[in-house]
Length: 378
Ligand code: ADP
Ligand code: MG
Image (cartoon, rainbow, N blue to C red; front, side, top):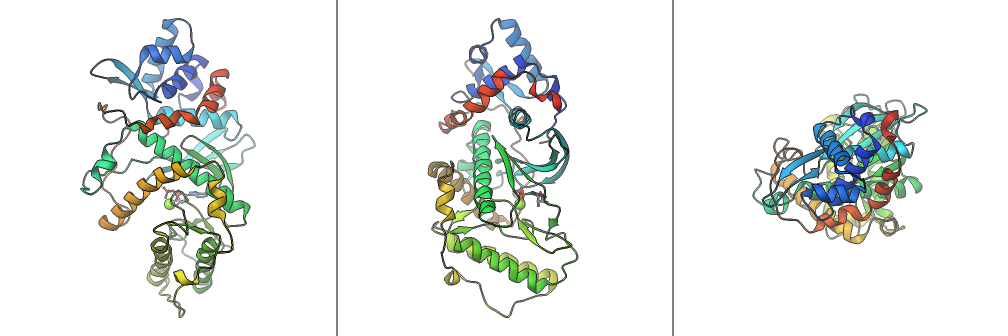
């Protein structure tokens, strides 16, 4: 789905309160009843609340849902985008939104700028966007999720990505500098390079190959496996030929049950690409799992950084399922885009885990309650 920020500066402080209330209400209501939105918003007078609800619904930030027992609203991805952006705006991480530069399988990538005009990358995680309709295996696990649970998973992906980038950057790995994270969004340094896949002028393929293999081993020495180390996630500067690695939601510890498999797959991706693109095959075998010498514990360090084991497990289960689908169906195509947030207002049972949504949102939400029209600078 597109990020449409046109309405952001027209929202009043009441609208923001009501939007935040809709998000908080989703903690334990798939369909948030209007009286509950009103109550959480703390606004006096039903007419103000109703006006805001109608404003927000008109621009698609919340969607009306008819339930068997009552009518109510749920937050859309658009609404979640606005809440995240508003947080960035208030923290002065973002001032303006520029062009979309990438559409990943499960993310949208935008160039944004801060007040000084410094450009950054905004990565919006959109788990659940790809279609699982054609897939029999794991279908129930994937399909029996509601919009709120996908939003929660997207948030986990953003939190995890930010935590890993931070630890990696602090330890001298060539990754973008992480700048900020809110809800399902990560803000990071813009790297002035293209993915290896697109770079036409690689001066010395054997050297780059050796650099990349050394990097895989360096990750592993520090206890980590990238897990999606391929020509799309390695940006190469055309002048310096230096690689920068991106895309971390699937990173795992070398103690992970599938660690060896992921390690071998990362190595194989690079081998296959270099052979196909440059006709280059190294005379040396490997690197192989046996070459890994652990000298550091960044996997342990990142666990202490606020991304809990339980959250890691939840996300891991999803990512492993997706990874298996990739193998079954061929990389990168699970069918056409579906599952968009506005599509169907199905009545589904509460998934139980949606109650995690609010836990760490409360801080941000309280902020938003107290500010007027923070979006006006956009
Ligand atoms: P996905 O998880 O959807 O694959 P990625 O993080 O790999 O998302 O980003 C998708 C694309 O966006 C990349 O292939 C790259 O072209 C661009 N991109 C992402 N992050 C950056 C960045 N920090 N600087 C420059 N380009 C980026
Ligand atoms: Mg990627």
